[in-house]
Structures are given as C-alpha cells and as structure tokens.
Length: 54
Image (cartoon, rainbow, N blue to C red; front, side, top):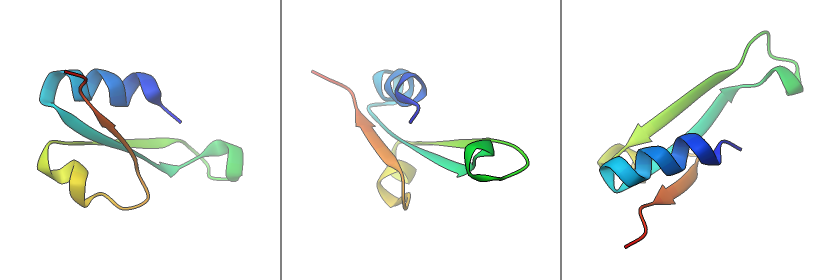
C-alpha cells in the first residue's frame, strides 16, 4: 500500500485513508492514488485507513 502517504496525511489532519484506484500492477494503464482527509476518510470505501498516534 502507501503507508508513507497515509501516515504523513494522518499526522497532519488526524485521520486519512488511501485508495489505489488504478494500478499498473493489475493491468491498468496508470497508477491513481487518492488520499482522503479528515471526515472524508471515514467514508472512503476499499481504503487503507491511518490515524495519528497520540
């Protein structure tokens, strides 16, 4: 997955979720990574979730 992106985002806004919408590894023509922030992270489907540690 993309722990770097999710972790950095979560440390800055408290919660994030990362979705890989397109992946070259599975035959897509390109990669597309979406980072959902804050309240949108809770609603993201099929995403890896990250939270800031206290």
